[in-house]
Length: 109
Image 1 (cartoon, rainbow, N blue to C red):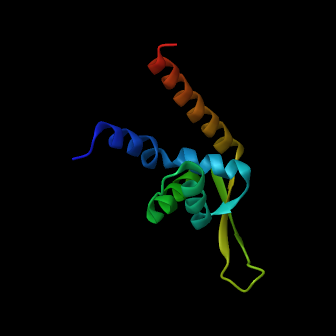
Image 2: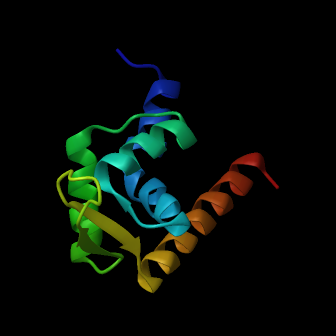
């Protein structure tokens, strides 16, 4: 049985993974596994690998990110790098504004 706090943390992290992905892509283009690692480092939770790929696929399909294959200079396999689009930037800003508004309402400010 999970506690209310555990459920809240799950809802605000893994269930809105797109927010974290878009936020990191604002910094620079990244490939899927790199994004997963950066989420762990920057936000202190680790999404499932499959979840990251599913979210990236949906974001790309909906036009919030673009993807481009890049050849490795070190002989490693090519990687698919994701980049934030202007639509993705607006979605990120809208998501952040919504969360900020809800927090202010919860605080009673």
